[in-house]
Length: 392
Image 1: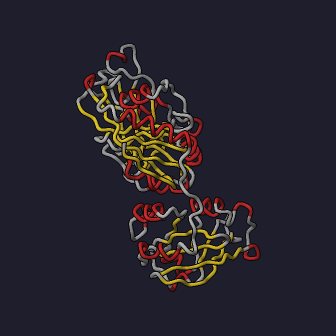
Image 2: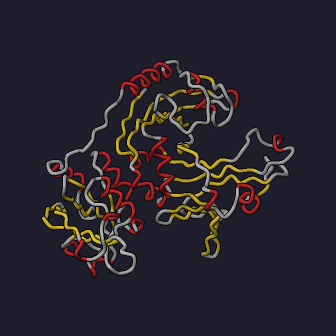
Image 3: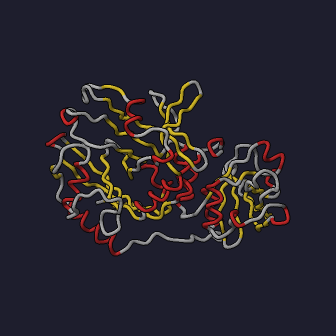
């Protein structure tokens, strides 16, 4: 698992992002190095498929169907020509396997291996023993930037509007509460409020994030109820609690990550599945379910191109004011890193749930249930392949 890497994965990923390079990671185990074998994870298989290098789904089992790829292995900033084998063994279910020839001479257990593509060959970098800053200059001759970030006429139009709004200085909120910052900006841009899952401004999603709360909601997505063990109501009943705000009604306002919180609630990430539940005495109870693939599709549809607005605030409640300071412009979601960001706790889930009763409006102005997926602004460069920052 990538979590066993001996260096910081997200910091390393950001370094590759800054160079505009597509990348996938694997971490060899001691057993794998001895047996010359590594599991080709779902994320890694998607990388190979997206780069038109190899599709394991179309590969038959057995050594006769093994595919060899010309490979440049980089270790300690030195280059070695070798090959990589991609195959599905005849044993078990033919789980996809990969091996970089001579890797055992250039890697140790826990080393973080970065895989890149250059036409029909692979480039494998041992990030744990290389100086990436010095290395990137030399590999540009072998690994050109496949895509570059280009602004569209729509993004230029929106940017000019944002500059005009920012020049007005602090603007009083048109709505109280957490949603006031986004509602106010959308009103100024002439966007009507709606609950659509499509982007806000002519195909561009807009997310306003207060500086005091840098983790912003980047989409909402309810569980797949057909595969969940609890309904909304049952989840509140089983995991909810009473607070002064909601009076006699149970509520469940909790942030979940892959590390259990104070109420022992957490997310469990399996290869293609995500569960929300409670862990106690090393036993995890699966309450609700999401398909990782559907989660990735939602992110891709919602954030094909996004303006993340940095907002300075002052005052509170009906007197809160906003100054829109800068924009982080992102495009092209790297769905392959979504499992990594979940595993590292960089993508989290907020339960925003409460019991409904005859007098529930007396205790909250909100209605309905919500499941809010969030990411910190500082981690955007790991989720998106291309990113650009504008000061307003």
